[in-house]
Length: 104
Image (cartoon, rainbow, N blue to C red; front, side, top):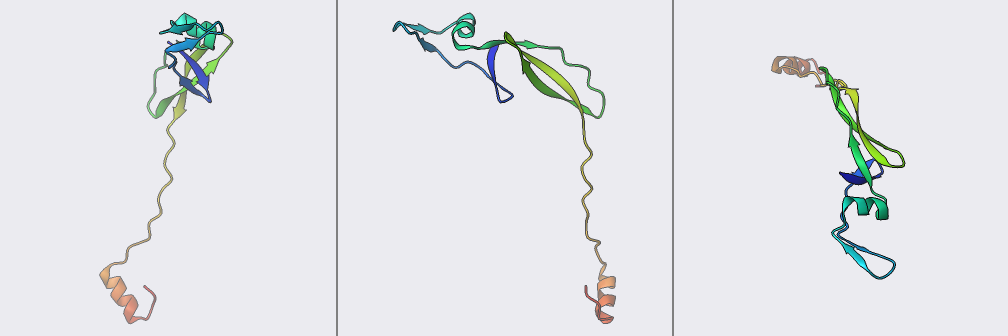
């Protein structure tokens, strides 16, 4: 597979017609042609590591002059923040509060 790395995301080729400087065009270019003429790079995938419980894989791309590398980082699931809920008063507590003149 070939692609370009733009803002951390892969962009696969969509060009089906490439105009050349001499007025000619190339239709349905090969991967090699796209690499040579338009700067696409080959994507090399690494083997993902085993995922232990409580972790997930985050895909990270890095590139050098010739290739783009698809790598994986283990990330730990974060625990969600506990949601505070107002205590619920029973009907009896509400009735007592009203009799005593307290705010409900």
